[in-house]
Amino acid sequence: MNGIEQSLVGGVEGGSAILLPAIGELISELAGVVNLGTEGCMLGGALGAYALAVATGSAEIGIIGGVIVGGILGFAHGYLTVFRKADQLASGLVIWFLALGLTSVFGTSYVNDSINPLPLIKIPVLASIPWVGPILFNHDILVYLGYVLVAVLVWALYRTRGGLLLRATGERPEVVAVAGNRPQAIRVIAVSVGSALAGIGGAQLSVGYVGNWFNDMTSGYGFVAVAVVLFAAWKPLRVLVGAYLFGVALAVASVLQAHGVSISQYLLAALPYLATLVALIAVSRKGSSNSPEALTRALTDTS
Image (tube, rainbow, N blue to C red; front, side, top):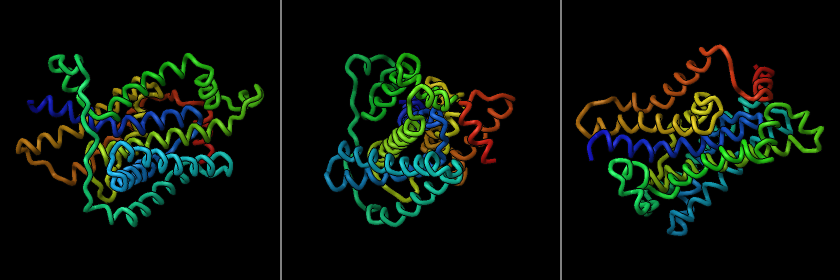
């Protein structure tokens, strides 16, 4: 496998750890709530998945731990912002700091543990397609989950009543309330589900892509996920493309190092944050925003 193929394979694997929380953030923002705590949900999910995997000896069961921890942190953010009217940006940062502190304390004992990571699943026939097969169809189950979730989300958002309610809640929650629905409940559920997906993204790192645990292992991936949603203008298919582009960018650096090209470790650590800044600048220069109206109002009111 040459360097280009290695970069693309690594981009899909690493990009899935961005795609899953980005899908979750998309759901949350479509309901009118931005979650800067996505990074914290990923970090908590990574440790939750790894801890459960160590306890049970199964990486697959460990995924459940990622879902639970991410969902709990997301529910806390949703409750604070929706029912207690907390500042969305401040609350998200609090969730991140909370997760960073808790995982640093409880994660230390897992640094030297080892597990068998999620096995690769080669899709029959598809994996045999020259060049494309090894890149897209020889991965762990969470990579395939990302594929499926994007397809389901595209269908659900524009073809189901639930998708209509979600989008309407992010645009005009007062209209949703007049129609007899509960926009507050919809928002909290959306944030909780989105954060659970961020927890799965963290699990993809700890029990899948990386296969171990170390403190602050998400390295800004959650913030990249938020940037991907902005970069993609709240469109699911663009989120898919954006996540894998970020994944490839990160994988290229590792491949270059493996081939003897010297790249500063400090630059590698800064890449997620640089990518976030570039995406935000690109969006702001468009001069207009496609963001949900209620989300724009919420952020404007807090600025």
